[in-house]
Image (cartoon, rainbow, N blue to C red; front, side, top):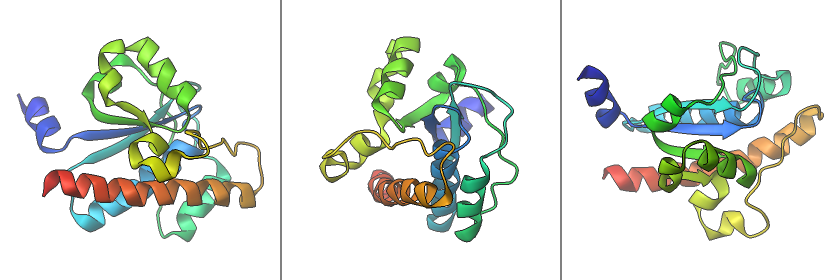
Length: 164
C-alpha cells in the first residue's frame, strides 16, 4: 500500500532516449531541479534502450554542471515494463522511441509522447525529434540542451496547471 500511496502522491515522469547517457539525463536532471524549485509533487527519472550501468556522457555532465546541477551519480538504466507501468507520463526524445515503447507496452500508449509533442504545437513544427548529440562536440550538446530546456520549461508550466 505504501508504494501505491507514494505513486499517487508523487507520480513519476519518465524521460526516454536511446542510451540514457546524453539527452534523457539532461531532461531528467534539469526537470528535477525545476520540480524541486517549484515544490511540485512529482518524481523524475530517465531510462534508455541500451547499456545499463553507463555513466552520463561527459558533455552532458559539463552542461548540467554549468547550470548548477550535479549529475555525477547518474548511470544509465534499461527500460522495462515495470518502469512503463509505474510512470504517470513518459516523454521520449524521438518519435521512434515512442513507437518502440508502444510496441513494448501498448496499454501505456495514452501516457507516452515525444517531449516536443507533449509541449505543444510550437515545439513540434519542424520535428518531433530532438537529435542525439552522442559523439559530438560541446557546442552540439549545448544546442540539444537548449532544445530540451525550452520544452521542459513549458512542461513545468503544463504540470503546474495540473496540480493547481
